[in-house]
Length: 114
Image (tube, rainbow, N blue to C red; front, side):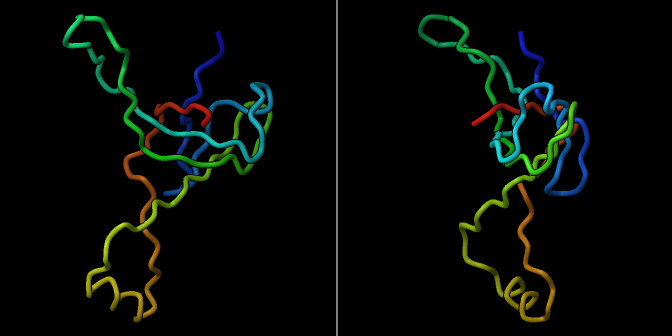
């Protein structure tokens, strides 16, 4: 069984180190989702386990690969809402208008290829 791909270190709000690299065939440009394991979900009709729910935290792309680790850069989620007046004013005043990446990614979260 292949070793699980996990977040090993957070470099900043968008970049994280994963615990696998060239030795596990991780490739530059490869896409992954980052998720936390949720609770086990049971089919209400049969009582059968449907598996563990994946709580998606984000997705990203490998931007650097080493033998035993790699760096994944998270995509910035698209803004799906209208900006508030204070956000517009902050942009006009020169403050960078960068939305936060998907929040709450932490060491130990899981990854899988998309």
